[in-house]
Image (cartoon, rainbow, N blue to C red; front, side):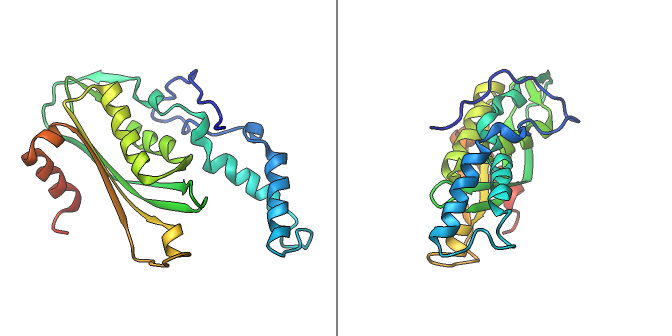
Length: 212
C-alpha cells in the first residue's frame, strides 16, 4: 500500500528547499536493506563482498530520495497565487525531471513543458517546476504523470486552459527488452482552450518544438 500523502504542508516559498526532502526513516530503511540483500543473493552475488557490503544501505537511502513524492502533496505549490490581468499564454518549457517506472523500477527522465491561459490568477513560475518534481518522485507511468500535472493546475489555478507535454527516455526500453536507446516517448494532456482551439494549440506546439 502506498504511503499516505501529507496534507499539512505549507508553501515553502521560492527560495526554500524543495518540499519532500525526507528524514532518514521516512521509508522502512531496514526492510529495504534486507530486501536488497536478498536480491543480491538471488542473482548469485555475495552481499558480503567489499563492493556490495554497503549497497543495501545505499539503495534504501536512494529510495527515500527517489520516491519522496509519495509523502508530499503537489498541490501545496499551487496554493499561493497572484492577481494579474494577463490574457495570453504562460509557458514554462524544458523542465527537467527524473522519475521511476513502476513496471520495472527503472528510471525514466526527460523534460516537461507546461502552459496555461490565466483567468485572473497566476502562480510563481518555479512552482510549476516543483509540481513536476513532486509528481515525478514516485513510482510512475509517463501517461499518468502528464494527466496528473494538468489536473492539478486546472483544479487549483482554474485557468482557461492547460497544456502539459512530457518528453522522456525510458530505461526499460533502452537497456533491456527492445534496447532502443534513441527512442523517446512524448505524452500530452490538453484542457480548456488548448483542447478546444486549434490555433492556440498550434501556437503552443510552435513555441515548444519550433521547427522540429
